[in-house]
Image 1 (cartoon, one colour):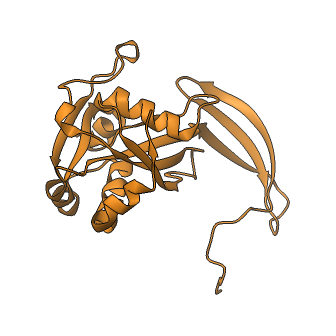
Image 2: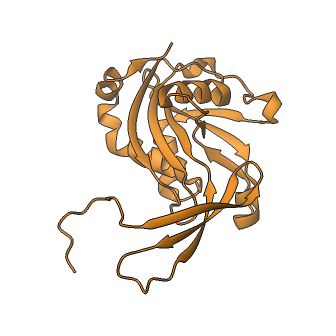
Image 3: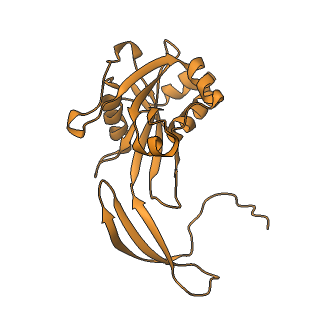
Amino acid sequence: MDDPDLRDRPAEAAVSGPELIGKGLYRYDRFRVRLPGGDGEALTRDVVRVGRVVVIVTVDLERDQVVLIRQFRLGAHLAIGQGDLVELPAGRVEAGEELIDAARRECIEETGVVPRTLVPIFSVLPSPGMSDEHMSFFLGVVDASKLPERAGLSQEHEDIRPICMPIDRALAALEAGVLHYGAGILGLQWLALHRDRLHDIARQGVAAR
């Protein structure tokens, strides 16, 4: 069946809950869902409540470089045996925090560098079948010459290693399929599509304070 209005839209769903199933770093909630056209029986759906997240495509426009980070991820270690992931700086938005303020904070915490400019570029739901995580991506313009060897918050036991490389090299790694971090792949794909317009896009942004 053809769908001429090809965009996401509100659903006619009756949702009841949540019922708390478990709580660690994130809540794990259970809901009952009734959809139109069904047999009337409620469906059971479980959701990990991650919430809002920011991801920063961090570039040095003067040097034509991109800033990435390395850190250990248990999920990747268990899934593919490659837990030392190359990522983009990212993190959860705190309660009451504006997205752009969260992007600035995470950029500083995970790269050790204050962004000069931040521009919102796109958003995604990385796994809506099991999580309410909503990722908002930003272009962040930085001075990569100021990168430290280590970054991350000691109180959160983060051991983050910022890395800087030519954009060409990062895009070659993307093409080679050696990167697995989903948000990093999306961010680098955006970078490949908009590389010739980065200066213009950066001029639309907000100077980070």
